[in-house]
Length: 205
Length: 138
Image (cartoon, rainbow over all chains, first blue to last red; front, side, top):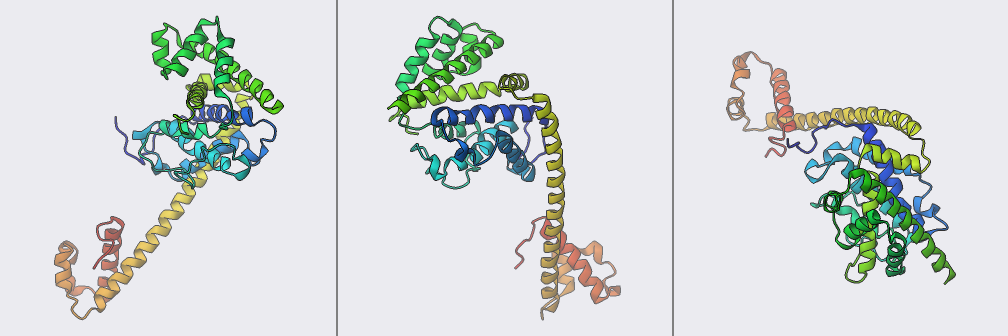
């Protein structure tokens, strides 16, 4: 059933709260991974919870701005609102270590773009990571680390090489959702380690 | 991000984002992820829901205030419009009644005082402006 913009949906706030906190925590981690050291300037004294509450508050003030045709409420909160609050902080001069500084939308970016909420987050995620990193080396590191772990290898192949979706990887490699989640968790741990290793190398240079 | 200039970064970012999306792909997965990070999810939910309830009440109060304020400003616009109409040298109540399809309300027009007519018209135009049928009457 289509729901018109502005129609109050039935909201499971507990689910939204948990998912949004997980998203925000996991997403902004990218910053501390690669920039290391002084991260307080990035969060401007804010905690993950502050971004989550700010997004929910913004939605409650203007629920009509959420357009269900562009995605679910969680996606609006995460990919549109949290994303914009974090990226606004990223624009602070002291965080400027990437060229991906959203020149196209300059201001507060809770935009009314026609793209889906999910599509909007990629360029902002890229801006979490500086440009002057040897990403090919990170890829090599990850490939060596996952060698022999079939589940993780399949996920890496599907996500990194073919840009596949979760359900497609599960189908393609005959995995269960639990297999996927466990393997994804192992891959995330390895990515974390790769980033830490890279940071150490970068600082030595 | 220019994918052509830095394809390795683009691919890495996509991979990173898939990991983030997976951590929040369901309530249970999100909860498990947060707990693996040392977050007390019970406390998070209790405190978070309290804050959300408070925000809902504040948002509702702000909305009510905004609606009341908006209604007042529309009424003021309608009043100014009616006063301008009544002051016009060519004002004709019968014509207005016909134009605005107010015949049912004006059966006993002769028995209405000027103030009654003014109040009825203000009410009519307030509702009309609020419905957006005639926000710019000329």
